Image (tube, one colour):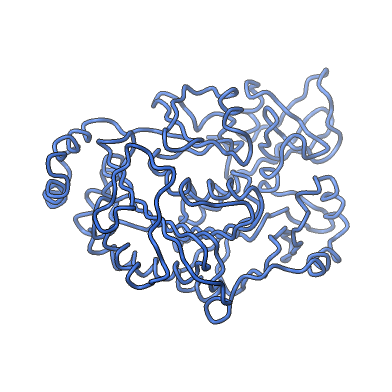
Length: 462
C-alpha cells in the first residue's frame, strides 16, 4: 500500500510527524478496521447486543459503535434491512457523536451524503425538532435519502443545494450544524487506493478554498448560542487547522471549544488551535480524521436579512388536516397518535406527507420533506416504504412478525410472497406490516393465507 502513496504526500507527512513517521507508514501494511453503529432511535445498545448475531468489539470513543471482523456478512442480515445498525468506518463515527445535539434542536448536516453522520444526528433528535440533511450532489443525495428512510427518520428535510442557496432560504435558523467538508481524503488512502491517485490531480490546495466557502455559509446559518462542528478525513493542515484559524479570524463571535468527551488516543491540533482533535491511524484503531467544535456567542436577532425558521401555530397545524381524503384518514387512524401529533399534513398531487411543524422554505431542490406516507390514487391509499420504516410491531393493527431466523424473512426481502402456516394467526385482510423480531421491514397485503409482497423493489436483497 505504501508504494502507491504520492511522494509529495509522504514528504509532507515526514515533516508533519517527525519521529512518528515510520510507525505511521507501517500502519499502511495493516488492513483497515470495519465498524457498525447501532440505531439508538430504534433500540438501546444493550438490547441490540443481546440480539446481535455478530461478534463485536466496542469502539472506545462512541457508545453505540462497534468493530466487527471481515468475515461477518453484516449487510445480509435482516436487522440491517430493518435499520437497526449502519455500517460505518469507526473514526467517521466521531463527528456526529461530538456535536451536542438534543431533542428539539434545529440541525443542519451541510455535506451529508451518504448519510452515516446524518442518521446518527436523526437518532439523537428522537423525532423532535428537525434535521435538514443536504448534499449538493444529486446522485449522492439519493443515497442519503435511502439511508435516512431505512433509519426510520421522520422529521427530516433532504435537500440537494449549494450552501449559498440554503443560506438565502433558511437564514440564521440552526442550533447545531455539522460540516463534514469535502477534502483531499488523505485519511482514507488505506481504504480507497483511488483517492491516492486523485490526490495527485486535486490535492489540499484545491479543497481549502471550497472548505472556507462552505464554512463561511455555515457560520451565518448558525444561531447565536449554537454549535458548529467542522470535520475532514485528511491530515493536511491547509485543510484543517488553517481553515479553522481563518474562520475564527472572520467571525470574532466564534470560539473553539473542547471536544468532550476527550479520548486518550486523540491528538491535539497544531497551535494555536490545540482544542481541535486529530485521529491518527497509528495511534487509534481507525482511519485519519480531524474535528473542530465551535460555539457562536451573541443574542438571537432575527438572523440573516431577518430570516429564521418559524414554528407553525396549533391553528395552522389543525388547518392542514381539514381536507385529508377519507381513505388516507382511515389508514392514518390505524397508526399511533405520535406519528400524527404535531405534524403537518401535505398532499402534492398523489403523494401524501407528514411534515415537521415549521415554515419550510420553498424554491429549494427537495428530495424529500418530512415523512412520505404513501400515494392516494383513484380513491385508494397505498402506504409507502418510508412509513413502514418509521413503525414497529406495536405501531400497527395488522402485523406479521417473523423471527429473523425464519427463511421467509429472506424470501420477503427478495420480493417473494409469504405463505402462512395454518397455526399462525391470520393478520386480517388488507395491508399488513411485515416485521422481524418486532422491527418493521415493509408492507404486504394479506389474502387467503398469503401475504403479497409490497417491499420496495429498489431495496430488495440481491
